[in-house]
Length: 581
Image (cartoon, rainbow, N blue to C red):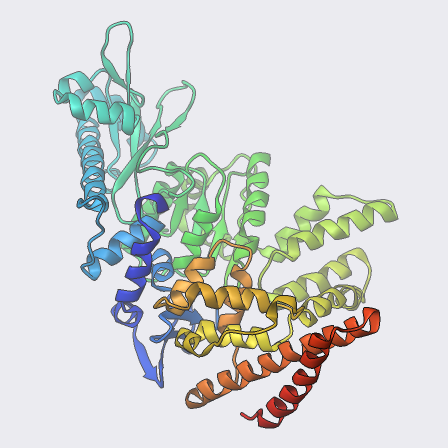
């Protein structure tokens, strides 16, 4: 996507837009000092832990860890792609995106509108055909399955007859788009007629979160295979991004306390008809990280409810593994195991809403399902097998970001394997490694300077040229000087710096430096920064002094270097005496 929008434009956009102005239109913010506080839009909370900083043009939630600049906020809040978020921001703040005097995004928007318009027209055509003579059998099938006319129309269910394309679309351009771009039509090489890949199937329109039709699902109403067929991925449809029913449940519910994830369209529609209006379906694929992120953006609780067979249990386990990195504080997943041979559609019709909701309220917790399934999959009878099992269990647990949840799971693992002090053993072994890592990232002078620079980019003007740094072995000094030289004559913001290092190996470190609290009042930051600069100068001179002393011991010094060492001693005494905050 980045090839269509230059980094220069992104930097200009970050400079011109106001993150507070955008966010305050979406959530209530209260100003305290230089920061704005509010209830986080990315997780459910009572006390405000969401902070927006107008100077740095960043937001951070101390509850769920959500963090970033204005582009990150739009991506997560609106569930948009990177390019879509740029487009939205350019529209809101009236900043045109130019590409050879023509707006690429404007042309792309028109192009997308043609796609969406064609999909809407096609859905309208399918919907009408369900109630014509050729759709009579399909409609009868739906009614016999127990769907009423209201629910059929609500989900815009339709029917596709054979060889309608040439009659319906005389505009060859539209046929070409449906054929080559949207991949709904195929060409019969024998009679040169276009035919619908969904012909003679019941049609289920698939809408994205904004309500635009991006694809279709087709189901046979006889015994032909395959039973279900989805749109091929195309310019506006990616199966790994979309969830059937997501638009409908958001439309029906302002607040979603929980969402059930099922396997098929029929399951979603049946549950909806029984007034369980919080179910979505994956589209013939396994659940993806994009799906889970979308769901956790609008609810704190996901319930996985797949068919009551072995494949369903495997799908539950795969969903658990995919969900691990998203289990931050307050986010939970549950597992609803159905009787053998049942699916949500068949079961709710047998039991009714009340009994089905009792099953929802008695789902298995993450820990229950995790250990139950883990022990079924891994039996051990020797020390070697038991050790491998422990490593495997820990490899899953360590992916969970919530530290307290990790601790409880490790403790439970110890009880399950019969090692009652397992948590103490784990802490002893793994905390040693953590201590080494933490100690290696102490708050050194260079890192404090970097942190203050990133948080307050205007301070870069106070950084002087350093002497003797080329022979220095001070950790991080070369990066600091390279960083200063790169940004020295540029007007930069914290948000731009964060964007520059996004996706690099240094991204984690830069984020850490941004959040460092130096415990300094704002009016003293400049003074403290100058103090650290002077301290760094002393460190560099001391480093040079140590080098000359070492060289003298090894091979002796020339008269020139002896004079330098003598001069360094005098300079250091003077600088140390003058070093004050």
